[in-house]
Amino acid sequence: MGFSTIAAAAILGVAILVATNTFVGSVIPALTDLNDAYKELEDRMIERAHTDVEITGVSTTTGNPFNLSISVENNGSETLKTEKFTVLINGTIYDFTCSTSYLYPEKTAVFTIHGLTERGLKRIKVVCENGISDYAEYSV
Image 1: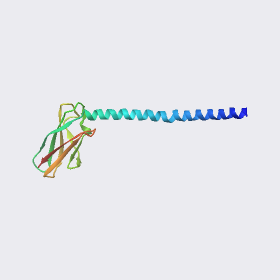
Image 2: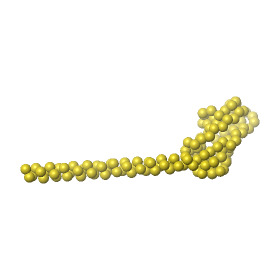
Image 3: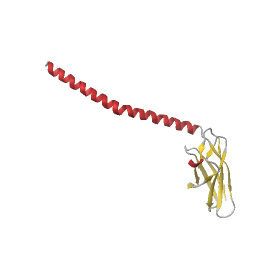
Image 4: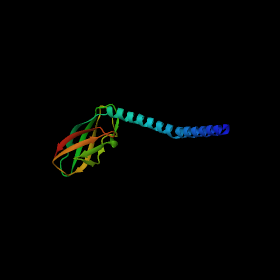
């Protein structure tokens, strides 16, 4: 009976080592990844809290087709890349050119959409990279 007790203890010891190895090899990296993901989420939430944009003016050129110019002011404390913005008119995404590559805090950038033909009352939405947006309306 003494040998079977030693054998059982050895089997349990090996099983505990295998379980510990599995835990350390899979659970610890998963917890590290989860911690990194929460840190990235926190950074994004802080960036969103510090972002505020406002459409300060909308103008059009004469003729058909016409160009639409949208002045956007950065009222937040984050510097925004204008190439990451999205401009929607009545829910449709349009390509645009911008007067600057970056929209710095307390500065204004002009987004221009070329070759528009639809007339009437339209609703504009300008969306930043992190989802902060502003609305305006114009009529041609």
